[in-house]
Length: 269
Image (cartoon, rainbow, N blue to C red; front, side, top):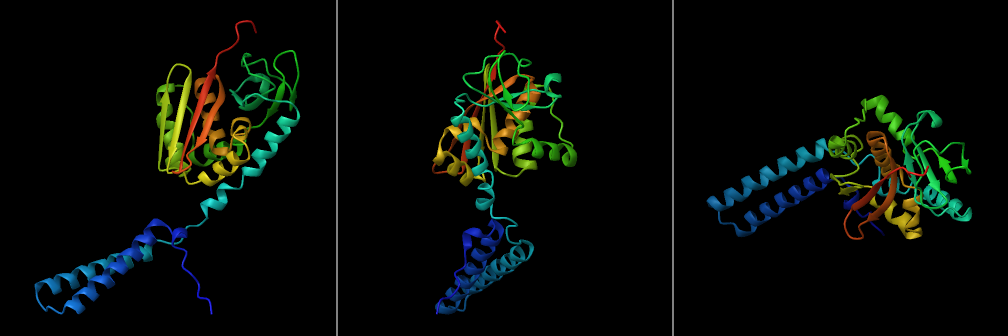
C-alpha cells in the first residue's frame, strides 16, 4: 500500500514555516516529557512549545496554497519563443532583436524588429508589415510578446513610462517586484550605451533555462514576455532603439541577467 507523500516544495513559504513551528512545538513537548524534570526548565519548554504551536496554527490558517505552480507557468511561452527563433533561422535572419520606440510610421506602437544582420539604421526607417525589405534594413517586424501584458498594466495599474532615464531603475523594480511579482529583487545599472537588469529570486527561471537549453539565441531573437516588457519600457522611456545583447539565467540560483544596448542612428541613414 502506497501512502501519499506531502510535496513540501510546492507549498508557499508561510505554510512551510507553519509546519516547521508545529514540528518544533512537538519536539519541545517531547523534551519536557522525556526529561521529566518538573522544574522551571520544563515549564519554559512547554510555554515555548505552546507559543510555537499557536504561531504555526495562525500561519497555516492565514496562508493558502500557491494559486499557480510557477514552474509550470514559466514553461508556457517557451515553445512560442523557440518557434519564432527557428523561423528566423530558416529565413537566414541572424541579428538580435531590437525594440523600436513609438513612431507614426508604425502607428505609434512599440515594435520588435529582428534584422537579417546587425541593426544600425535610424528609428524611423523600418516600415512595412511582417516582412521588411530594402530600402533600409531587412528583417522580420513583429509585435512584442509583452504587448498584451503592457496594455493590461496600463489599464489596470495606470502604468506610466516617464521619459527620464534617471527613474528607470525605480520603474523596472516596481514593475518586476511590485506589479508582476516575478522576482524578489530587481536592480538596474545604466551607463553610456548599455543597460543591465538583474532579477534575483526570479520565479519563472525554469522557462529561461528550458529556452536556453534549446539555444542561447532564442532569448536574443525572441525574448520571453518579461524580458520583452523590460525592453519595451526602455525603448519608450529613452525614445531610442533598444537591442537585446544578453539574457543569461543563472544555473544554480533563480537569477537572470539581461543586457540591453542603445542603438545610435547611423549617420549615413
